Image 1 (cartoon, rainbow, N blue to C red):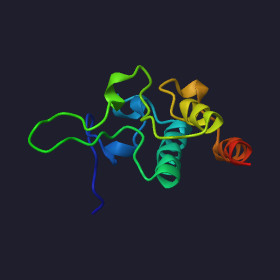
Image 2: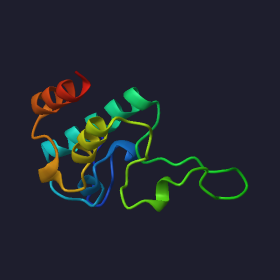
Image 3: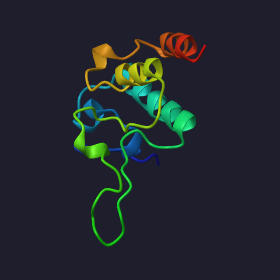
Length: 112
């Protein structure tokens, strides 16, 4: 018998879920663009765009990523790539690329 979900149950990997997905909004292709953006950021930088390293035993962040107004970690990225991820990982889904083809085209332009 297939597993059933119920209202209020969150299914997915939280580190790759769009903010509106976590909030329980209606499904959207923008969720996939968010996850694609997180994975691409990880591939290019070796770091998750939102995860902070915590110094064991202190609960303190080992960097100042949480102290900036911008939610993305400030890994050394060229300006155009940083701007690309600023849009691709925008909390406003309308600012994200509309589909994977647009995402890829924009990424190719900033990496060229």
